[in-house]
Length: 343
Ligand SMILES: [Zn+2]
Image 1 (cartoon, rainbow, N blue to C red):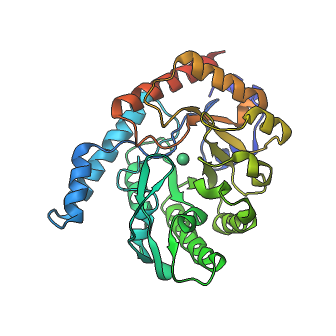
Image 2 (spheres, rainbow, N blue to C red):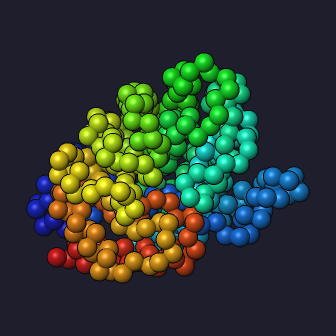
């Protein structure tokens, strides 16, 4: 960022925290939500490993090559905050369930349109047994000078998208899941992660559960100096937006292109002091957005969110897109942002 911009931009609490972590971002920082598409070879190899006909170490080597690939793509595109691409996560629930003791695999269920995942079963006491996301995050961060955000699935979403056959109540199950995710965050922080994203797409599915979710999120972030992002998608943001302001995170990463409510009305009614990662690219559509459409979406966001608090992102993970679509969509996003920075 130029000196001129430094002086003219009011500093948001989020930017202050980033500065304290040694991270200075340009106006309208660009990022993605987390996942990138898996190459066919990687999918086939994962299947073979699950059948026991290929070594897990071969898969791990191949996954690291995929991380190398996506880091170099992000460098070329010129994104500001990188991700490891989640190339080693089959889905964002099962991947965690496999690495937490107490879960057993369940059957395949359908969620949201055409997305399927294996709904795990909580069969005994849940305990952290090994680093879950930290090894791949750490590998990715060593490849670049850009900050790589670490991404964990939130305790409430892990609970909601599992079958509980052990705990007497969701409250008691959530207490242990909260401890596990806190331990994972501690592991990430210890190895140098500064920006940590918590994925809680289930956040607004049961508005009555909000106090439980708030307690859980307070518990997993307490005492850490990290910059926390909370990702929300799928649900009805209007149900929880005003209450969400009490969640101790620095940035709300929001799906905005496919939502049933007028976000500008919502943001005007309940202005936020948090930074907002605003989705300007539809992750669920193959159609490449025009620069004009992305520009309109950014202008619309800037009407109700101060530019100093605004980050620009796709709506959600990009794993269901092709590699070419990812590159084209992100190129439009970044080129449009660059035009805004020059103004
Ligand atoms: Zn999402």
